[in-house]
Amino acid sequence: MQRGLNNLFVAEWLKLRATKIWMVPLLILLPLAYNIFMLKKVMVDQYQFTDENQWLVAMMMFVVLGGSLFYPFISAMLTSHINRIEDQQNSWKIMLTLPYTWSQVYSAKIIWLVLLALMTQVIFLIGLITIGKFMGLDDPILWQDILFQVFLGWIGLSVLNIIQFWISYYFKNAITPIVIGVILSIPVFILAESSYGFVYPWAMPVLAMNGNANVPYFILIAIVYTVLFGYGGAKFFIRKGT
Image (cartoon, rainbow, N blue to C red; front, side, top):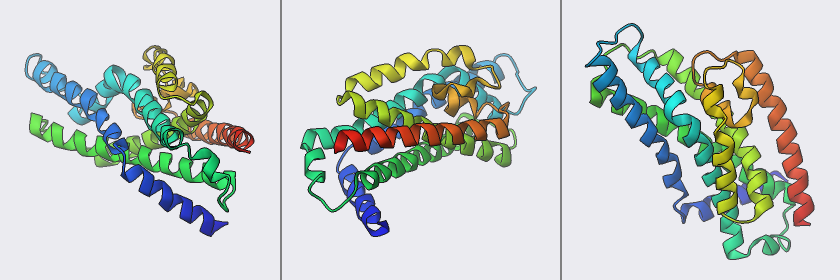
């Protein structure tokens, strides 16, 4: 069984490598760059804001003003794209003839979605430091705080990807899951200042990164959602596939 999963993992890599899915995580740099620009040119240079560490403020601004919309959008794009590869090549039926179980197919795709979530966070971290240094943020970089918040954001985005994959597979087209993801991201703006707003799945990536998260509670919610939606999504995926 492990060998079959390894083969499917490599097969997914070969399919993804030939697409432009790797461009999707780069979208996170757009709100990040805008918020760092606003922080440096407006808050720091014009209003002499120096009360808080600039790097943590940049992350907070990103959470409130950009990430709330972009993380759900990126998640919807990633999950929709992974499903669209199979739809365009009509390869769902072909998989029925291969010596793999549908649970292995599902697991391989989920693993790649978790890795793509990690890629998004790595790009965010590199972008934060690179753009911040370029714009002249000169406060000490609080590596421990930043890395921990980025790590929590990875967990939140991974959970959201699992949920969005279920939605994308259900609708079988590229546009509807993205529209649903964007619509469901709207309440995140209301929950942006809440320490417990991550009980709403579309708020999990950004609210985990706002520095005020109740970490044990967040981890508990992430585990519950992963088991609940992962198991439910797998059952639905296997039932539809067979």
